[in-house]
Image (cartoon, rainbow, N blue to C red):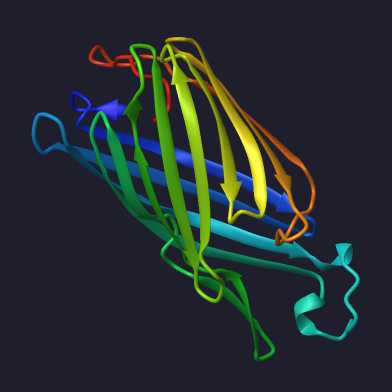
Amino acid sequence: MSLADNRMGAGFLVISDQLGASSTNEFFGTYSYRLQLDKHNTLSFGLQGGISNYQTENDKVNPQDSSDPLFQGTISKTAPNLGAGLILSSDKYFVSLSIPRMLEASLEEDGITASQYSRHIYAMGSYLFILSEHIRLRPSVLLKYVSGSPASVDLNAAFIIHENYQVGLLTRDFNTYGFLGQVVINDSLRFDYVFEMPTGSSVGSNFVTHEVTLGIRFNVLPFHSNNSVLSF
């Protein structure tokens, strides 16, 4: 929620994610501040802090070595974490750098250390091209890096039509390709859909994925406005 005539923001983030025998549950409080540099450019920064719980239920897996202490019973690790990010933006461009979780988490059992979470770094850039009165083109790039793994690059380009519709294409490392779409139903309601299809050279999941997002935005304080609901 925006505060102080839209100069500050505060909120919370709740995440519950499960993949196979492993699950992650997180709660973060968030704060942001926006500084108007001049008539066109804005610098924003954000902070978040909270706790993360990483859990693995080993009765759901079949390890080759059942005597390994890291595969005995349920392993659970709860740890605090912090995050920060910067955004420089205007009506035409958007540049950001963020580290959502700065603190790495690991679990030690009988002298054996297993990593639970490694720090991720994200950098993003986007630019808006005005093609006509009602059509815009917005290409963007997202760089992701985590220690011990090669950097990953997401590229996408979307047409914005009448400020209420987006359609575009995306690729991740040129190994996964997909389609994205967004519809602003009214000033408060937004619907997003993303379809991704991996190729034979993709790493990780080889399944087609569908992502659906419903965004709801509403005024709470007198100075709040629902304008510009379409995501940049």
